[in-house]
Amino acid sequence: MLRHLLKLIWKRKSRNLMLSLEILLAFLVVFAIAAFGLHHWQLYRMPTGHAWQNQWSISIRSAKDLPNDAAIYDAFKRGLLDLPEVESVAFSSFGTYEMSRWTEEYMLPDGSNKLTIDAMAVTDDYFKTMEMTPSAGRFFSKVDDGADAAPTVINQRLADRYFPGQDPIGKIIVVASKDKSKQWRHRVTGVVAHFRSHGEFMDPVYFMLPRYIPGVGKEGAYNIMLKLKPGTPRIFETRLNAKLKQIRNDWNYIITPQSEARASMLQTQLIPLILLSVIATFLLVMVAFGLFGVLWQNTTQRIPEIGLRRALGADAGSIYRQIIAEQMLLSSSAMLVALVLLVQLPLTGVFGESLNWPVFIAALVLSAGVIYLLSLLCSLYPGWRAARLSPTQALHYE
Image 1 (cartoon, rainbow, N blue to C red):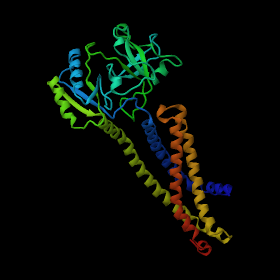
Image 2 (image 1 turned 180 degrees about the vertical axis):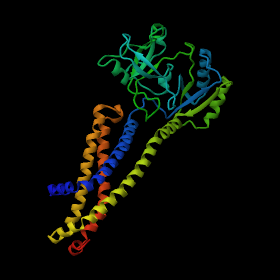
Image 3 (image 1 turned 180 degrees about the horizontal axis):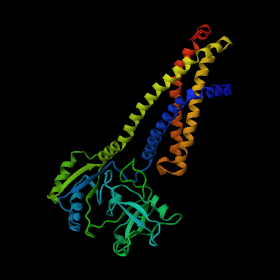
């Protein structure tokens, strides 16, 4: 039976070419959307490496560059800790769930392995405030005062790249610069399994958290991170802002609960996926109409052939199954061609980790299921219409 169906499809290859191209296009579109969506789902399920439920972010806005004055930051810390709702205070160069990003090129002391690494300078209390735990080593603290290299915590991804099969604790990373006076040294004190500052939909990157000491260096910290007691109401923002103004009245403060920042970031990052899904749905509807029309036309042209089969003893069910089976085989052949093209993507690594093998296989299965379902639905009525013709009607059809 299969061999016979393949012969019938091959004999009408010129008529089936357009139909195959439509199926191929639909499969590629569905695969692209499925892979994009599954990649986002894979990212969402990965840990971000930091808490957000009871954390609030305070972004400092000033007309001038912030002075890196230890007394000012100490006043902020003491004043905020006086509030009964505040459990912990830390400072950082920017906040999580923000579009801010700081990258720089680093390398090993021998000049090898140059990498562009994301970084966020943080104070000693940052890890406690963000409820982070080290997977190796320890977080930096006052015991690192006077160290010969800046204490730094890195993520596991960076540790695996720079120090594969080695203990990264105590290793040195330097800023990649031809000027040796600017090759600042960083010593790894600890490793965290994950850290993604942009949240759940951020692609994993090489990340390091160097130590920031208020009053040391020229750059000030533009972000204050708070850990509040669970259940702190949103109205606390009024008292918090009043306290900040009391400490430094000439600066402006943007106070954002991390739960709200996270929701806003997720919504922003989902917009491309929503737009692509709408476009894909529209294209699939157009393909479905085209597929239905071509199948209707092909079935109409084959009415004499169908009548001959009925006259030779084929029942209506056999005709119905033949029309549907032919469409399924045609869809399979079109998807097989697409598979040959698509499998090159993970093999060559064109899209990097965005299209890894689990995402590729899952997107392939999902796309094939959608196309088979679409083909089945579009072939049901033409097949039913062909099956209900009597042999006399079909043989006299012109």
